[in-house]
Image (cartoon, rainbow, N blue to C red; front, side, top):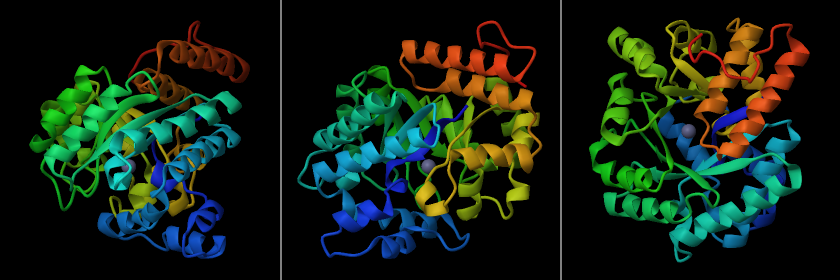
Length: 338
Ligand SMILES: [Zn+2]
């Protein structure tokens, strides 16, 4: 199954759409070059490429269109569920944070209704924004909880802004509204940052977490606590989180019993979508069909889905397991650790 639990709206802008939205004019080829990463670097350089898309989010109709197309593209690629995230305060300007989120939700809902693929929006606070701004983002996300917004995240440059405790109030607001909680951590920061995110912010999922394997104690904690790690191997290579794809910690996390799910992070920047990331697990890291089935089960369990969508995906997983293996699980549920 293709359950995408870590994907940024700003990383899914079609170059052709960028050319149309660009007030200066421009063509799709130029935009493809402007958005695409040439080679691995560091997180700061990576985020600059993602930020190249920001001027395109200056109007509500543009945000709605980009969000609609992002869901359309994931559905057309065979996706089963897309959890899309973005930081609305970056794009709010005079538009207002709430209206910016509403525009993204409108686009996503239209594409989900047309394609039949469910989607949910994870609203992101940003590390470089003041706590008051992130509190306002959380309040806006909370108002739309259950109406297209499913989760809350902290994103941005962990290397430059490692501090987490200043964002506690924002996460408390999101938690009180029933939103799922995740945080980019241990991506450019140390292993301990993942544990801090869970303990300080109350998150149940960690974005990337590549450095968790650097500290045996944190690795053991990650396995014992049941925290879910959203892994995005190709993106981690481009950010310099791992020096080589072959050195990616996903197999070590899996073998240690850490619950893993998959995302494609910023596919326009990396040129790699979820299906390729999933194939990478199999071809480069030796994931077996059973281990991929486990990935699917954990993904459905960890997704910030509405209950009926959760059950729909479990049903599809059971059907898929029945058609591809001789030992299907009766209801799609299984042990949460490989
Ligand atoms: Zn991310």
